[in-house]
Image (tube, rainbow, N blue to C red):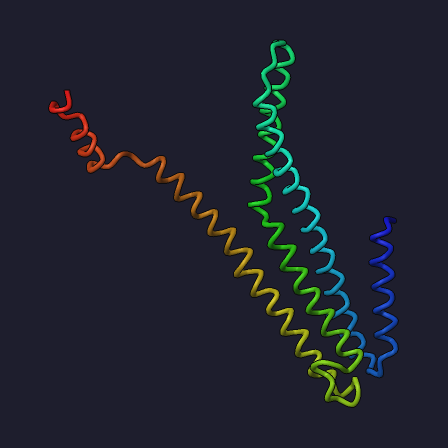
Length: 207
């Protein structure tokens, strides 16, 4: 087990112990585990996954984009070495293009920020509830504050779905439609208006 996995396990165990110390019913504690703690853990994992892939793809594109012009600028007299450098340049250019395309398609950067924001919102609500601070400072006990806490958690989770659909999914669909429209435009035949314009350009007066 890596140190990061160990830290995440320890953090989850700490939160589970915190839940046990709260003066709540078994049903309310079960809500905290299944609806709050599990969501914090799951979204935190998705945020780390998206962040790692975003860093990998972006760094590959950036570093490759810097190296390719340098390789192109080399003036090598040895034909064998020049051929090897040429193939290396072509291969590296392909890797850069693929990295950029994959990140653009999956939107790992947007997903990372989205999951990170939701995770931090859930954590904030959890800590404020456990300490009866912030939104819960006016309550005398966790039992009294629990209905408001449950409402806040459900609101955050509902907003998470809505934001994901509007910002991530719709952005991907929009890019897909723009790509299809561009392809159709390129494949469409030349219009009569364009032909007339071409005829005007090739007039006898110009010869």
